[in-house]
Image 1 (cartoon, one colour):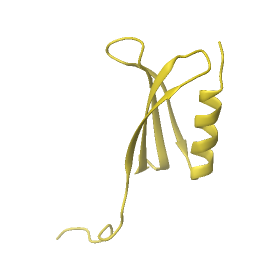
Image 2 (spheres, rainbow, N blue to C red):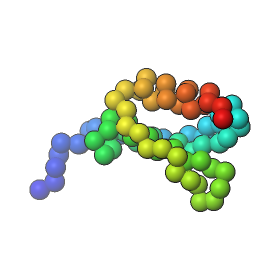
Image 3 (cartoon, rainbow, N blue to C red):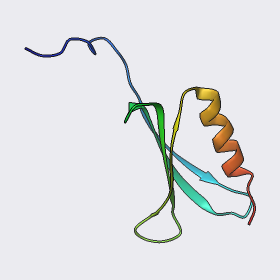
Length: 77
């Protein structure tokens, strides 16, 4: 018998491209309800091929994700 606990629930996956103040570009993958995180965020640096893993983070709220993305965008080396 199939688990009916997730029927009708909507989850999302979102890919973003972000550039920081030093013009460094990142690919960000955001997945809802993954690996025990409400919002699971994986960040890759895109300056090399294949993309280099930069960070994996879990967040509980949309605001926490937004704040992290703003911080990443505003960083300078």
